Length: 330
Ligand code: ACO
Image (cartoon, rainbow, N blue to C red; front, side, top):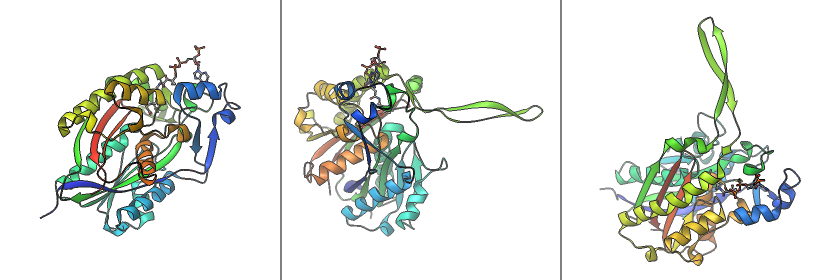
């Protein structure tokens, strides 16, 4: 008889070595440290070098997560890579599987932008709850620096690169207490990394379209409004499913998009500042990677301790948003 509960038993993270601070960035676009810090809370971000790859960063975060869970790569049954920026459009999870030597694991990519980690967590949990798999590696990783327009000051100041990973294991008691996920494609146009193509005539009467992905476009005000409204709502839904009240939460772990969003959500939910995990000053918005990087840092700093109750919420392009409540460790 399998254990059908879920525990998150290890974490890891990896960041590229190159750091770009606001002051230096203002040499590239017309902006200032003052504008960026007051509007976003971001002071610097890490950027992947031309020799870095998404699968390398993800592999290094995964190696740490596997070690801290006390298992080996050979124990893994499943690898889910949440990313919007794979090295290969066919997916990068299998490359990571090979890098790790996780020969038994099935591996695939999952795309849900900045909600990718939370969507991946819930996806991974379903395989464990059905008894199909026991040991799952979930990675959130993105290299958005390769997809922003570095001439567009409205977007390029916001993003950074990185990877974070966790190991989920089948467990006697279920530590995933509740979740809620949502999508609304009618608002898709607010945040895009869209393919743009021009018609090409292959043969008479047979046309195809070839092109490339265009840099990120975003309606900042609408995304802000969406996040501040939907995130508290979805957290309330997850709390209801977990049968918990907000004061039973030890840590608010939001997608690190913008300090103003973190503050507004915490305020709406009546969560005191000391329970809000924030590291975006150092890394900016790392998309699918932001929650697992912040989680891993907080665990390694001894902030998050065994049995602490965490509410994680991701939100972003799609539009997608979701929340998951879990207790740390077995
Ligand atoms: N430096 C200096 N000035 C700037 C910059 C910049 N980097 N960017 C914009 N401005 C200017 C604009 O041109 C505008 O000037 P104007 O009034 O002369 O036209 C002025 O600043 C105000 O611009 P707004 O876009 O109205 O600025 P706003 O107050 O809305 O702040 C921000 C912009 C920070 C992006 C805000 O809208 C926001 O936080 N939105 C949420 C975005 C977000 O978090 N996205 C990611 C979440 S989803 C995901 O993670 C993928």
